[in-house]
Image 1 (tube, rainbow, N blue to C red):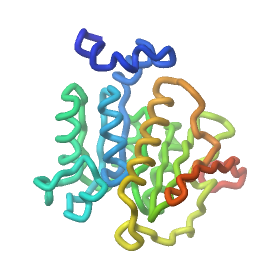
Image 2 (image 1 turned 180 degrees about the horizontal axis):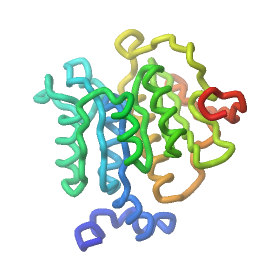
Image 3 (image 1 turned 90 degrees about the vertical axis):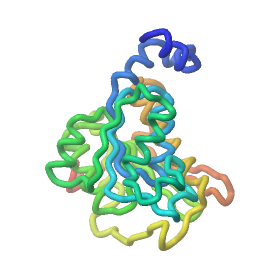
Length: 246
């Protein structure tokens, strides 16, 4: 690290859990963020601020006026611009030393497999089951830890699925294919700060995975009811009959 980096990340480096070694791990990491909406925006900004050296951003959508209520990496002037480019601009204004790879397309098939193969951690910030199942399948196949978040109305959830750990469940241990009732923000609504809370939790879990600190949400599903501001936790077990990881 150079002098500027030591100063920029000094508040993290002084933490004994992070120190120089943890910060260098962050600087050397590549995080794949799929979905640059309400969850992906705060996650990307905090990971960039924390010094993750390489962020790979994937989304096939463009910025719309209705996004600006909650997708904090995007601004009014970027309406009509691809979300990955808009987010990349925000990231570089915050931390111009971060390398950003823009994937302005829906990741599926070989493209998804290739993106996952280059990642140290995946953040699933998408909003549909089909994409989530595909991301999970590649995470399991390639042993890449997956941080999954979801938020709708005034409720959110986050968990970590880490196939490097023998008894870790995967996303499909929790949800089965066919559990595909589509609940989107455009149909059901969402309160703006909720996605910020969940996206930031995803960033925190990602940092813990990269730096090798603390206890992650592997094997645990964390729920937030924003209406009462109550968190609750559910233990997750690996399903031996899971079609993906069993």
